Image (cartoon, rainbow, N blue to C red):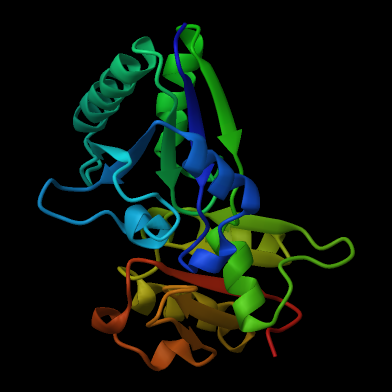
Length: 235
C-alpha cells in the first residue's frame, strides 16, 4: 500500500497560528517534506514549525530556487515530486509544510496536482493566509458587507495596478519590497496613500506594522511584506 501526501499550511510565521489539525498531521506523518530555496539556507517553514515537528522525525529537503525561469522551476517541481513519490511508494505518509495556506500561491500545489494525477492519495490541510493574519495584526478588515477584494501576488511585476485600484474596494499587494517607491507614486496619484498599511514579517519576532510605510526605504523592507489598501481607510 502506498503512502499519502499532505500539504500542510502552517500560517504566516507565528507558531501559535498553526492549526490543531496541522499539528496532528505533522505528528502522525512518517516524513516531513521541507521546502528550501537553496541547500545552504535554512527553511523558513521549518523554522516556524520546528517546535511542532517531533525530534528525530525524518526530514526530506526539497529545493525550490528563487527563479522566474520556467524551465528551472519545472525541473525543481519534477525532482521534488520524484523525491516524494519515492517515499509514498515505500508506504510512508509525507507532510509537505508550506507557509500560509497551500492553496494560495504555494509551490506545494504543483506537486499536489502532479502526484494526484498519478493516482496517489493527497490531502490539503488549510492554514492561515499571510494577508488574513496581516489584516488581523493591523486591526482592520479585508472585506465588509459587499466590498470587493483583489489579491495581487507580485506587486512589483503587476501591470495595470491603477485599474485594479479603481475597480476594487480593498486591494492586497504582496511581495512589495522591490517596488515601494513605485507603489508610493501610484497610491499617491490614486489618493490612497493614507488609506494603506504595510505589514512586514507578520507573526515573526521582528514584525513591523507601518501606517506611514512610505517613509521607509526599500532596503529596510523584508521580502515577507504586504500592503493592504482600503478605500474606506485603514484607521
